[in-house]
Amino acid sequence: MNPFRYKNGVLHADGVSLADLATEIGTPFYCYSESAISAQYRAYVDAFADQDAVVCYAMKANDNLAILRTFAELGAGADVVSGGELQRALAAGIPPSKIIFSGVGKTEDELALALSTGIMQINVESFAEMEALSRAAVAKGVTAEIAIRINPNVDAKTHDKISTGRKQDKFGIDIELAADAYRKAAELPGLDAAAVAVHIGSQLTSLDPFRAAFSRVAELVGELRAAGHDIRRVDLGGGLGIDYDGAAPPTPAAYAAVIKETVGHLGCRVLLEPGRNLVGNAGILVSRVIYTKDGDDRDFVIVDAAMNDLIRPALYDAYHGIRPVAEPAGGANLQRVDVVGPVCETGDTFTRARDLPPLSAGDLLIFDSAGAYCAVMASTYNARPHVPEILVKEGQFSIVRARQTIEDMLRAENFADWQTAVN
Ligand code: LLP
Image 1 (cartoon, helix red, strand yellow):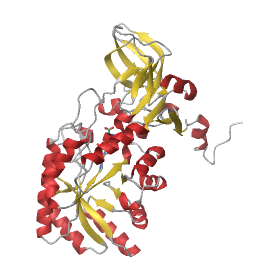
Image 2 (spheres, helix red, strand yellow; image 1 turned 60 degrees about the horizontal axis):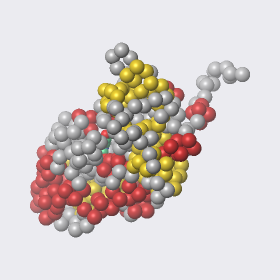
Image 3 (cartoon, helix red, strand yellow; image 1 turned 30 degrees about the horizontal axis):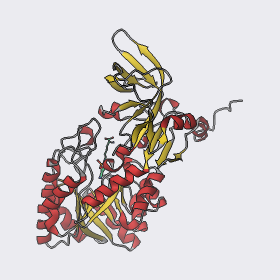
Image 4 (cartoon, rainbow, N blue to C red; image 1 turned 120 degrees about the vertical axis):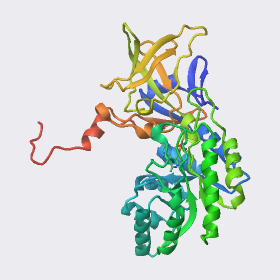
């Protein structure tokens, strides 16, 4: 369900006019639909109704507190990758008993924080980390339930920068070394290796790499059990893609079927870490055209959002749908344009040579599928303040992150002690 639809000639977000919102809030801003997030979460849970599965939202996709609160109210857990994310998840009321801590470089402080909050599982990614965690657990007098994240050497066939399960990628322990890793975990004090974890990448549009990776996990669980390890859970990571450009990725139900087929016979609890799939299509970025500029070679639409607000096109050559907020007249001629932001580098280009309805200065437009990995990846490059985030639900809206001001920015910095003040 796309919650951003035209009504009376104006794009609405779950009953709220984006034109009215833009007048009230100013542009640019992110807008998320709580109903769309809930619907997608329910689709996920329904798809796994006949399996013992726990959905732990990968909050790196969108860690706004109100989004986390939505998941807490739905009963979801969380997959966190830093002490900061752990504290945000707890602040939003996600129970520690449903929190997984992933990541390749957790510091001693982060491990200690995880142990003192009593989260469900810490996913260990190296022998060195395993030793550090054992020391921290012994010091605290607790036993840490861990998964060892294995690297199955499977190519997820997604963008190079978001592939994580190939041998050359920094993640996990090579599957060939898994037996040694579990032996070591059994020897070290303070650790209970309860699970096997895997995550091969993000924005997967085929089920085949999942099938390959999960089959390897199932085989490994058999071998580990035969060696006497009490493996009770498999953590299958996230990665299921979303529709950015009209090509529909597999549904949660088809994904659940692959999981049942590959690991269903193990009798393990299945932990899931979806991020993008739950929130990606539930958000947009709203922006206003500042100028248009017709060049000799190409025509530009210059908007007030930029790569600091939405970096995915610059970083991954990502495609985001672009639609005007005012519904284009039927049969309007399309114009081939580059849509660019004001930041001073050529990378600040949202799209090149896209055929769009006519756009003029002052017009509002949206970037679709901006609920995941957009606001969270924003920066203040070019001294551009963070933009607001709005949550809508059935005709209501709430500002869930205020627009940062220049004063906020300046307040966080100061001159060096030896410098003179500005009068
Ligand atoms: N679990 C782990 C251990 C992960 O590293 C990730 C994502 C997920 C779960 C969630 O994956 P998802 O279901 O969202 O695909 N910034 C990039 C995506 C980076 C993904 C990083 N890890 C982008 O904008 O495409």
